[in-house]
Structures are given as C-alpha cells and as structure tokens.
Amino acid sequence: MKIRIALIQMDITFGQPARNKEKVIEKVREAARKKVDIIVLPELWTTGYDLSRIDEIADQANESIDLISKLAKQYQINIVGGSIAKKGPEGVTNTLFVINRQGMLVKDYNKVHLFRLMKEEKYLIEGSDDGLFSLEGIPSAGVICYDIRFPEWIRTHMLANTKMLFVVAEWPEPRIDHWRALLVSRAIENQCFVIGCNRTGEDPANKFGGRSLIVGPWGEMIEEADNSETILYGEIDLADVDKTRSAIPVFTDRRPDLYRY
Image 1: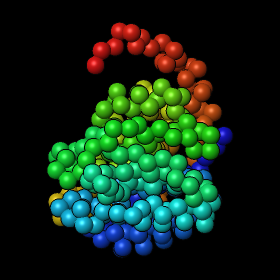
Image 2: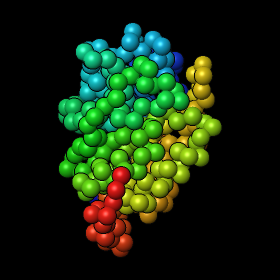
Image 3: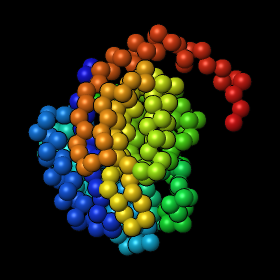
C-alpha cells in the first residue's frame, strides 16, 4: 500500500492565530492539488510559542479542529493537524489531533513531555494518554517534538504493530542535528516510517530549523526539506515495514522480562 504525504513546513506568525489559519488554508489547498493522502502540520501552528498569552489566544471551542475538519472533508484528505494550544477546564494543553477524509476527529493527544527549556511547564498541563490511532486501517501514532527524546515512550507505541510515526515540532535551529539524528534512530530501532514536520522561521526568542523529513524503516532518508518555507512531498510503501521487520526480527527477539526502567 503506497501513501502520498505532504508536510507543511511553515513560518508561524507569533501569537496571531487568525493569520496562521489563513496561511494553513492556503497551504492545504496547495497540497490538495497534488492528490496526496495525508497532510501534516507542525506543532503549535496557530499561536507559536507565545506562551505568556497562551491562556488568552488558545483554542477554547475547537475552532482550529473544526477548521481542519472542514478542509479534510472538502478535499477528501487525511490531516495530521499538527498541534494547537487547546484550553480546557483544567488549563491549556499542547494537543496533536488527526482528522480523516470524512472530516471526523480520530485522535487527540496531549503532549506528555513538556519542554522546560521553553518554559512549557509554566503555562501548559501535561498529558497522560498515548498517541495511538488508526488511519484508513493503518496502525499509526503521533507525538510532539520533545517526545522523541524518550525512546521508551516511542517504543510503547510501536508495540501495537505501528507502521507510521508522525512527529510534529517547533525544533530550534541550534539543535537541528539532534532532530535529524533522533528521527533516523527512532525509525531504525522501531523499523517504521517516521514522518517529521517541523516549522521554520523565527519568533522573538528562537530561530527554528525546518528540515522536515520522511525516514524509511531501514533509516533511509526518503525526503528532506531545507530550512525554507515549503511543502515537502513524499511517497511511502507500507510493505517496506513488514519486509524490514521480517529481515531483522527485533520485536520477536525482545526480552522485556529483563528490561528495567
């Protein structure tokens, strides 16, 4: 089964959800013309890291989810909606969500590992559930940025025969080599496709690295962007996951009885 994917690597206007939504509408429309199956957005694409105002500008009534739902239904495309700041009764979460071709919400996942270097823990509340979902019958998972530094969290998702791992991010330029190395490592050790969508551009405190990419289950680089604003297109063949896992049976050879965390 072959899947066409588009990753929207965009600059995010700091703290201005209305402008960012306009841009996403344009980018989704552009990607839809290429007849892709899945579109992926970056982390916190509505607000950026304007955390000091996040309580004011976060989604409070599923506005962004409703927008992406309408676009997915209009263009008959699955959309991994990046993540948004979502305000609930207990506070604001950094929430990844997934919409299918029919415009239905199939998953929302609140970021589990908050990134202290960008003071997320001061403004956001952490999640406690996994990022597993099924997209057109394909076992998949989604995580957010800092999550990829926790291989035990990623492996937890892979034990469900997951074939595609989506990573949405605002990964800074100074550590962009870590981004690439970590995603390639997660692909090799879990023998799956890793689809990483990062933002580009700058905010008042950070410069972001772009380099969105698609990595295959052998760790091969299928597609990779530079640090400019762009839409990265790629095609994957899900049969490659089973071939790789048959060639080197990592999951069969695991010894979880000896593993201690």
